[in-house]
Figure 1 (cartoon, rainbow, N blue to C red):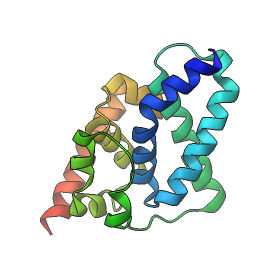
Figure 2 (tube, rainbow, N blue to C red):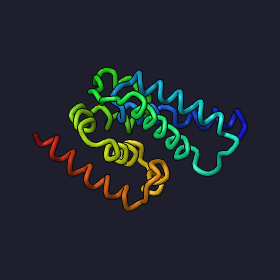
Figure 3 (tube, one colour):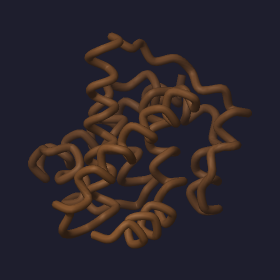
Figure 4 (spheres, rainbow, N blue to C red):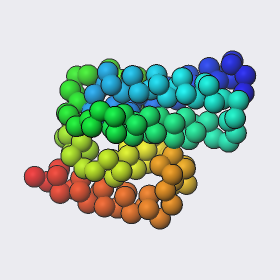
Length: 158
């Protein structure tokens, strides 16, 4: 992959990547740090890239997030709703992301459920793409989506 193509492809999904990471870790500044780490790793490995760039980049970012969890034993905290509104993205996903109650509920469910839900409903990725990003079988993605929805329903009804 050429440097120019890497930059072009990155620009197309950069806002979605930041929003995805902000949803996972609950901290926009930390999400930016993780996104930067993921982009650096992706650029270094771009010579080996083939396939769906967005799914490949999200997989790298997800791995960076997991690495960060392991290293820092990070505890999720609520994302300030004003801060969340400034994370770049397209109009359709920004509308969904602004729902403050949903944001708080997402941060209360397990990380794997949250990841599957954010990728499927916020980033509009297909089951097989989420499976690739999370490195789990498609059936497990469906399970996380189902149980995650149930957890969110319980939390939002309270």
